[in-house]
Amino acid sequence: MGKKLNWWALVATLTATLVLGGFGCGELGKVDQGRVIAFDKTKETVTFIEDVKHDTANPDYSGAPKTFSLPKDPAERGEDPKPGLRMKLDTKTREIVIYDPAAKAMKKITYTLIDQKENVGKNSPLVVEKKFPIVDKDKKAITVYSGRQKLLVTFSVPEEYLGLPDNTWEAGDEVRIYYKEPGKAARFMNITRTDIFKK
Figure 1 (cartoon, rainbow, N blue to C red):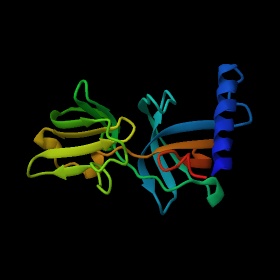
Figure 2: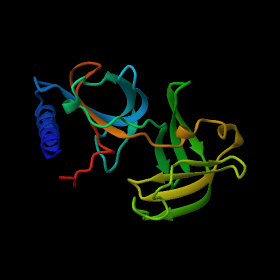
Figure 3: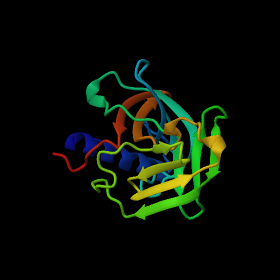
Figure 4: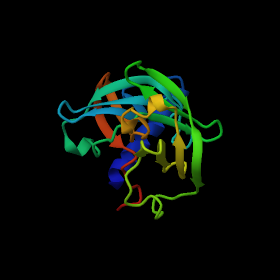
C-alpha cells in the first residue's frame, strides 16, 4: 500500500510541476480526480464528475462527466467505487447540489433543516454501522452523513424529490485516475476507500 501511495504522490507532484512550469502534459500522462456517479462492474467502467480544483479539502465537482475503462491488472486498480449523485452539501445556504442523469446537468435543491450535528467523526456511534442516506418517506425526512465535513444532517425536500433513488442523496466515492490515452485508465485509485495509515 505504501508503494502505491508513494507512486501516486510522485505522479501528482510531477504532473503539477509540468503544468505549472508550462511544459504541458509531457510523457507522464495526466491525472484526473472526481466523484463517482456511475460504475459498471460488468463492463469495468467508471464515470465521475471531475473536481476542477483538484483539492480534496475544498473540492469543486462541477466538471463534465468523464468515463474511463479500468485497468485489467489488479495491481494497478484500487477498490471498486460506490456511485452517488450528491455533489455538494451546503449548510449555509441549505442547498444540496446533485447530478441529474436525465438532464445531464447539475441541479440545486433547497432543503428545510430538521436536525444538524457537527464534528461527527466516522467512528461516532451516531454513524457507525448505519447505512446512509436514510430516507423516511412517511416523515418526508432524509438523513445524510458527510465524512469529509463531519456533518450529520436530517432535512426535508419538496415532495417531488422524495421519489428519487436513494443514491441521489449520497456522495459517491472520490477517485483518482492516471492515464495516457483518453478514456483508458492506466492506474485507478479509490481515495475514499484507501486507508493511508494502513501498513
